[in-house]
Image (cartoon, rainbow, N blue to C red):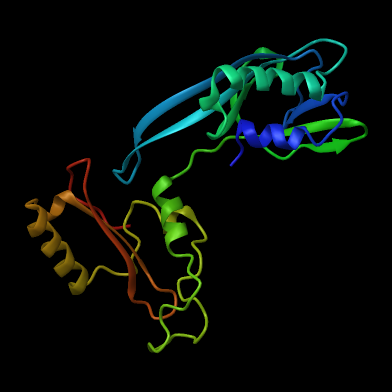
Length: 232
């Protein structure tokens, strides 16, 4: 995660007189660019798994330039330091950059590590991507250090059976089970009774272990659409 604090730490390693060049997949942000705004925001949202959460984030807005020289590292760092002294909550929250080539189509971009190249310090920008947060959490949950299936039929001793999720569809809020048999239906019915809701109003998230094929991850949530479920 890139923050203003981390960005400053990275930039301070280089000579203050080094030109700082923002680069994106479309090319370099023009010389004479201007830092127009540093912004802190608090957001609350609900993801595709029905999870409500709050978070903070920072934005750095840059105006594309048409000048002769790129801003020096020292001047850029001074701008950040002065801004952070007046708005300290910017310092340690995730940072994204807003910029558009030719000052058109303002785009939200993520920051990578600065790279020194031919006496210029390049600051790479990458296109920001939409993410499935339930998928991210599920990937983290099943990355285990010890085998969960040792001793079960079909398991390989000493090998993590769940491995890692290779695609978001394997960990998304849709049902990902190899089958929906009697055992799953019993779980579904039981869960509906616990929350006093019809079974059709529940979503079950689950995975099967890659070795023993048993259900190793399960979460049950109310269905936000209130429509009958479909199996994928």
